[in-house]
Image 1 (spheres, rainbow, N blue to C red):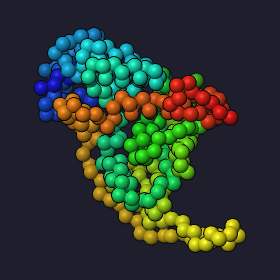
Image 2 (cartoon, rainbow, N blue to C red; image 1 turned 60 degrees about the vertical axis):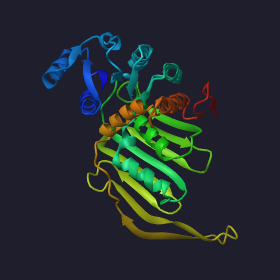
Image 3 (cartoon, one colour; image 1 turned 45 degrees about the vertical axis):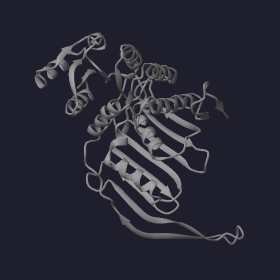
Length: 342
């Protein structure tokens, strides 16, 4: 039986505790939070847990095998590092760390200690994303031309990170999971209106091939939109995550070149066929993610969303900040020293 300690019982913490506590072969034995209101809610829901307000009570507990860090990103590195140093596997809320240097240090420490890191990129465990992954693997869309994502809503405004660091980790991790090609560079534009942190941003990601990815991120939208479009050589896909019924729709639409002998003879025809909505698994993604982590520990295998994946997402976030600071200029992703080009 693997014993789990959870640090942080705020917005996402209750979901983490509920799902980790329901996994066969594991149990949550202790939860920490500095907020007395959170501790009161916790004590009412889980009578058997050790409840504390100091993280060291969990980090130094030799009976705990796994520590889940569900706190603001600025605290992730120190908490995860101490957990690893004390021989505990680590589950970390997204984004992984505040910098790529911190992420690298944690990855190296985990490897040295033979411990597992999982970064909470929950969306790659959703039925919709898994279905899209299967469709792409089967070649249903053909070669991918573009990946376009819109993630907007009104709030919640953060006080420690901008809209990119708050919302983009979801979409960057999804894109990385779906697209079998590493992005090379990106350009980003952002503006702040409510406080000093950007609350609107647009990011364009460049690959070595002809495909492009674009992300629209916004805390100031009057409506909540969670839509991804993937355009392929054969077909096109729309994923609407706020649609409770038909989350994914496949469109047999495209463009075909009939004659390319000369630029003036170029004839383009538009193909319009059927639309169909594949069935999507409804199992809670966080449950599957937590089960996957426990299985990886038991079987000594690498999680789909390990520290390396977390690092790649942080590198993209850093590149966004650098590009925004430099007026949207192109920035290479993942270089030791971020390089800005005109």
